[in-house]
Image (cartoon, rainbow, N blue to C red; front, side, top):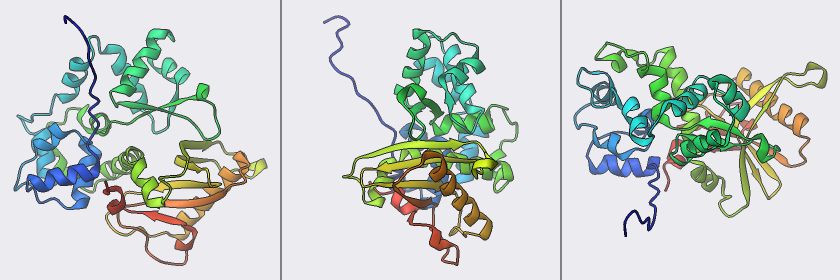
Length: 314
């Protein structure tokens, strides 16, 4: 029986719903929004959640975990990759390339940024990173598999590259960063990744769990002559019922207000998508935000809303 592999166990991340159950069992007293705030930083890793302490706020727990002198996760990033990969150097280069951009990268773009050789070994590294849940292979709407894009998906790794890599010395760093532009910007980006990790919950809320769907992204450059403004849509759901959901994710601590400017931005994205793809399917603008949308004269453009409560459904 020496070295005989009989099976594999794929331990998936906890979902938001599962983290909520865990938090309640540990009697931490966190609200749904506080669970989401932690999730965008540590993801669904049970070990990280098990380190949270009762009686401490979210920001205090973050300081205890990452920034205090004896923080248990202060060196987690280095240990993480060293424990998974025998020679983590090339894997870290790939992660670094993806962490430095808010847009997905092609295989060739990753090679250019890392200086690695485009061999079969490189393909294996991409596959291993995807299998471990660090990245995902995706595609742009209407593109073939050979045009695959790669995206960093691990919330903790994103958090590390934004706040831990510089090794801040302040033991209360996170408490002092609350509501700063840097944190607010990062939370918006990280929330988009969390939504992608909860695509099943989004499909369920839209009532399309039983319909054939395809999840992709969409990007186009400005072309004034063709009336194209230039847009990026991180999540597009094509549906077999001849409908396309264009998802806009906004992380906010109150109901989202659709202003005239935001309304025009959403209309521009829908227009660009229609002009570039030439789709004959119905286009539904879908907003994903923790507390829904304020009903005003511009909210009517939104065909469907998805809230944090929806993402927390099992």
